Image (cartoon, rainbow, N blue to C red; front, side, top):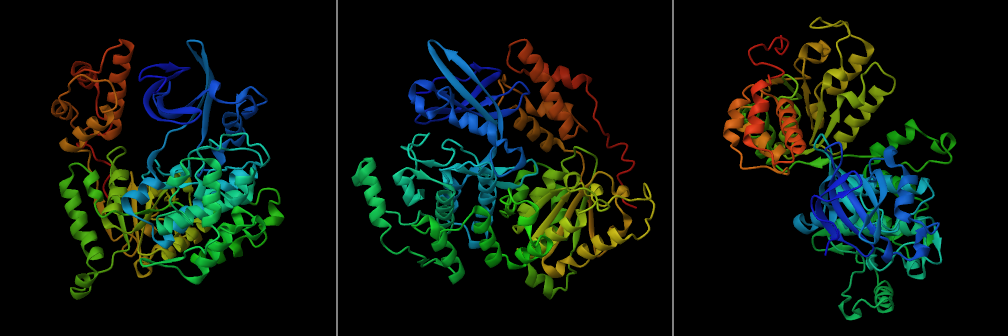
Length: 581
C-alpha cells in the first residue's frame, strides 16, 4: 500500500499519482512549484541497511545521481532535486528526476513484438551512449534491462531511448554490494554478478542481453524459474545450468547475419575478458557492421579520438529516430482541408509508388509548412511524418544553429548521410529559418554563398536517395531564397490557426489532469476563436492559478472570465508576413 496520497506535499512537490512500490522505495509522479510534472522516488530509511547508505547517512542512488549530473547526456535520466521529509515518526529521503512521457521497452516488445535489426541496433546505441557517460564518471549501472529503458517522447515528438532507473547505480563492486540485489533480473545479470562482482564488463553483458531481447523478444538462455520459488541459490544454479548450453541465435522469424551473431556472442561472453572492452567499443562494432558508411565517416572526421580526449572517450553516438505508424493525422483534430491537401499532393504518390510511376507523377523533394507562431506547425510536421509511415527524425533549427556557424554544415551532412542509410526517410526541420537565414534581410534575393550552395546540394533532388525534407517556418521570407525554389521545396502549405475542433481538443488536453468542475468545451472553443495553441495554454494556466489560489476546482466561470479579456496573439485578419511570394 502506498505511503503518500494524491495531493500530499513532499517538500515543495505535490503528489500526483502512485507508480509502483519497490523493495526500498515507492515511485510517484509529482507536480513541482513550476507547475511541471516530475518523477519522485521516496525511500523508507527503515528498509535500507546502514551499509547501503552513503557514509551511513544518505541513499546511494541519491548521492550518485547528484554526482552523475546528467545534463551532458540525453540518454540518462536527469537529476532535479532531493530532500528529506518526515511523516509521523518515520523519516524518508526523496529523489526528484525529470518526467518523461513514453513507453518502456518491455511494454513496447510485449505489445508490438521484437524490433527489426536496424531499430534494435539504434536503441542499443543510445543505451551504450548513456552507459558510456555513466562509466566516464567511474560509476556502474548494474541493472540494464528492458523495463529500465524508456522510449522517451521529446518535446518535438521524437522517441529517445533513455535509461530511466538508477536504483542500483554504484562504484565498482567486488564484494558486498551497496544496493539490494533481490530485484535484479537473473537473465540480464552477468555471470560474475552472482559472485558479487559488478564492473563495466557486467554492464556490457547486460546490454548484450538487452540487444538479444530486442531482436528475439526474450532474454538469452531464458528458462522457467518457477521451480526455484525465488530462492537465490536455486535461481543462480538454474541460470548457470542454462548458460552451459549454446546460445540460440536463429529462429523461424529471425535470421541473423554472421556478424551480428559474433557481436552478440562477444557481448554475452561468460568471461569478462572476452567481452567488449567498453561501451564505446561495443557501439563501434555495431556501427561498423550495421551502418558502415556512417561509421567510416565518423572515423574519417575523428581518426584518433583517444589523442583528443584520453580520459573521456566514452561518449558514444547519440541517435534519435522514430518509425511512422501510418496513422499520424489521427493526432490532428480539425484542419481537414490541410490534411486532405497533404494526402492528395504529397502522401499519395509516396505511399503508392506503382501508381506514381504509372501516372508519371513528379518526385517530391521537399515540403514547407508555414504559418504564425503557435498555430500547430510542429504537431502537423510530426503527424505528417507519422502518417507517411517511413523512418523519420525531427531536428530543431534553433538547436542545430545556422549554416554560417562552424560545424553546422558538417552536422547537416551527417544527418543527410544517416537518413540515406535508413531510407525511405523523412527529414523534418522545425523552424528552418534558423538554419538557412536570408543574409540580405526580409524578402530579398540572397547572393549565392558557399554555405547555401552546400545546403542546396544536400537538398536538391534528395528524393533520388529516398529522402523527403519537410520543414516548418514562421516566416518564409526570412529563409534564404536559394533553397525556396523547386527542387528543394516543391510544395508549400499554409497552416492556419487551430479551428473549432482543434481548439476544443487543446482545452481538453490541457485540463484533463487538473482538478475541474464539469466544463463546456464547446463554449470554450467558441470563445477562443482565432486563438493559437499558446494562447489557449496561457489562458488555461491563468485559470488554474486563480483556482489554486482560491483552493477551488477550475470552473467554467473562471475559464470564461479569463477568455473575456484575452486577445489572440495573431489574427487571421492580418496575415502580413505569412505569404510566400
